[in-house]
Length: 320
Image (tube, rainbow, N blue to C red; front, top):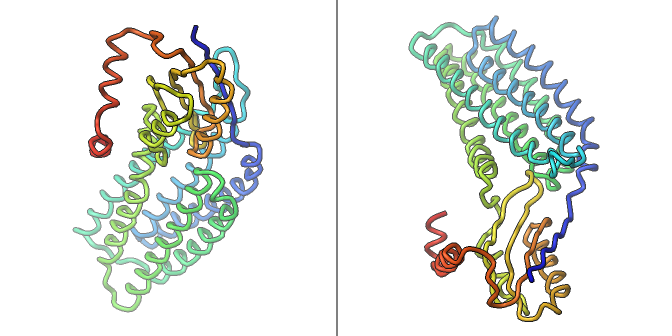
């Protein structure tokens, strides 16, 4: 007779939502700066400022969505949504990546237009407004620095704002160059540089969010290491149907069929597996325990999975 055991240990999102004030302050500060930067960019005809304003506007949207995701993650599970809305954090990360890439497209098109048809730009205005941007982005990054190692979304916000501060430094330098040399081509070039920075910083977010939305193994979790850790546990004879995926951007889950030599040892094996998986970053595990030799599924499926498990670790690594 098979036994199914569920072990739950969810992250404390309650503390993370105490960051709401930091999110609200960051959103208000950056939104006010976007308005100032866009206006200055329009009046001074600066693509560098306009592209950076578009980037900062996407940051505001990202912070808003992240705050919404944290609130949804606290909603209690229901009979219709048995995991609650924690998965919304994954959808938010995917949406943020898409928003950023759309912004990149607009920046590249306008920068190329000004590259082929250069126009005079107010270098002094660009330099002063970008300087304000450095301060705004730096202050916002500081708001998330203390908790950046406690949650992936908070760390992402911190790194994003820190990168934005560096981008603003680049725009400020371009303003100084235009003032000193009158070389206006640097403005669209900076716009293209900003676009490249956004793509570089967004690519990992897009890749990881797509993987999580498809129930792929989360970044930072090595499937082979997890499999070997479970299979090598004393008392475990065989393991199959092992699946690892993300419940949210902060919680990982696992299910597995585990054949044990002695069902009487099941409680001890379960406790040991739970502790080991916690060390590997998996806090939500569901085990189905079986006796050795007991059929658990269609023989063809089981045989196929056993054959896949024989594939050398090096080949699996290449596939990844």
